[in-house]
Length: 95
Image (cartoon, rainbow, N blue to C red; front, side, top):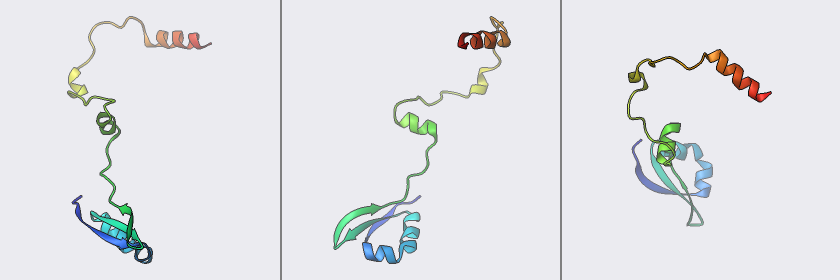
């Protein structure tokens, strides 16, 4: 979304023509809302939605993937026990 120059709008005008100003904001414009000529708020477009992973990476709580999981191939070797045995053991621990 392209960011356009900001404008000013009074509270009364904003209330009377809200849908007009919301369309302008949706188009990328940022508006400064004033009350008696004094700035009181900013009406701005929402940032582009980020995925959960992008938010975690930005917060430093995750690292981005280094490759495609499908490139790992099938597991090699024998499993130490069957899945059903592992589930039974896990469930027995909870009782």
